[in-house]
Image (cartoon, rainbow, N blue to C red; front, side, top):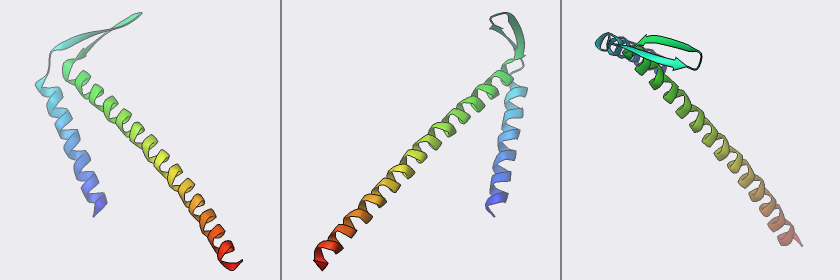
Length: 91
């Protein structure tokens, strides 16, 4: 079921991107130092949105990795504390 929702969401995003490109037909000049590229405004908008999405996903992944590392550190600290308590109770 989750795969069907993901496919439907991706299909909707693709259709919206096509609509955006179709509704913004004017050309934009992009200068990349040595080369000047002429691209449709809708394509530029979609590319910028995709780059923003990828950067957001990368930052979110970094945050999740930090949370997982902290969770591991806390688990190790808890286990060490429990071990000390058991040693103190048995002594």
